[in-house]
Length: 89
Image (cartoon, rainbow, N blue to C red; front, side, top):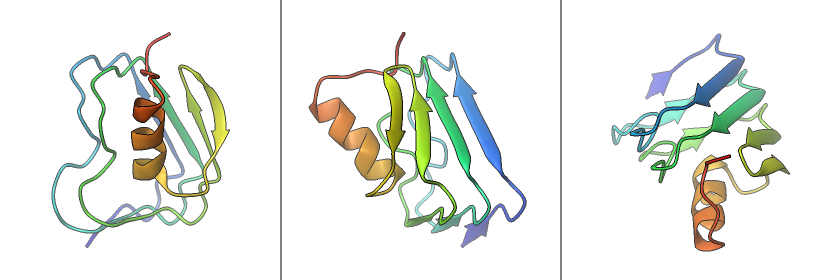
């Protein structure tokens, strides 16, 4: 498992080629992450390929609005892609 134990906020902005934050198959944990922004990252399809644990994260800010996370970051990204949104402003 890859753990970032002190990461509290993460802003991914204007990363035009970014397909994901952690594309390894290992499980990934950010126990203190409470702020996530994904702005103008049009090619992102997944946050991580392995299991993701972000227990403190409830809200994500994106180019298309601010959302409460209920299902997890990966599910959120897939849902928004299915709805036709992209991470562009």
